Amino acid sequence: MDTFTHALSVLVIFSIPPDGSVLPFAVLGAIIPDVDVVYRAVSRRSPGLYLFTHGGITHSIAGSLFTSALAFLVAAGISLSGVVPWIRPELFGPAPLACMLAGTLVHVFEDFLAYPGIPLLYPVTERKFTAGIFPGPSLVLFGVSLLFITWAAMGVAGPAALGFYAVIFFGFIGLSAGVKGYMALTYPGKTIPTFNPARWLLVDQTDSMFRVREYHLLRGVTTSMEVDRFIGMSAEEAARYHSLPEVQQHRYFSYFSVAEKKGDTITFRDPLRDQGIIPYPPYAMTVSIPAAGGRAG
Image (tube, rainbow, N blue to C red; front, side, top):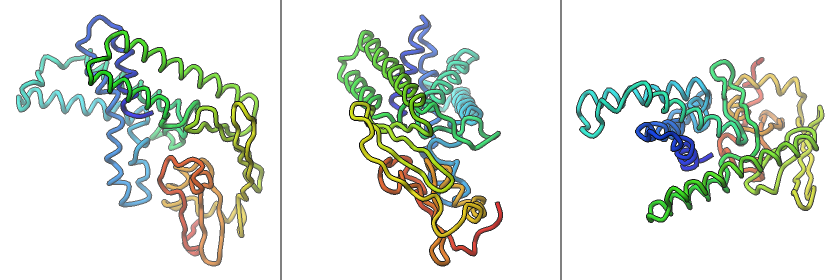
């Protein structure tokens, strides 16, 4: 999801208690994990640092809580120093910290709902986890959130509007979960949502190829394509290169990956992103390496 939606959803959830003094901490906690948008400057330096990007380390449970707690401690330290007068020491305590951490976990849970997922259990594993009920980001939720923020800036949105937003927000999540459940029970393999809530991708595989079908909720299967998993090389030969940092980076961001050997060059690519079928995430869609550069993984 986008940062606007995370902030507004936490605003809805934490506006329920009568004590509103902790609300800013909860909203700040919901924003903190997206600080990783600035990490791209780090990950560009080396393909092995691919977790330092949006949806990486700060979107794991451990990483998000650490980042949120660190931000809280820094803010508390600034308050004690008196450098920023309006950040008063009495604002900080166990309750604000707990709400800030809770807001962070709400953010992580909401991103878990979206494809292509997040490394929820890092550093135990880099594997991405997702419920896959809508794409990340969801254009529907982003549009509704942006509209609400615009109304609020114009002084139009009040408590009733926030309640209306909550109905749309949770209603869309419930509807998307229902559609995902239907798709997963009806079709084998991966069921991948797209920016169009009515359009899904169905991906299944054999030892030699991937089959991708485009499915529309009203029209059924509309298009289909088959992609060879290995071209000019075997699965065992391709696996030799999986330990290379640039290949690990590519596979981390990919929905699935195919390998092709031409002469002395081996190319790994994600057909869904490479062909613009799903443009997100935009990182490492393809990677080409010298055939002599592989090593056993």
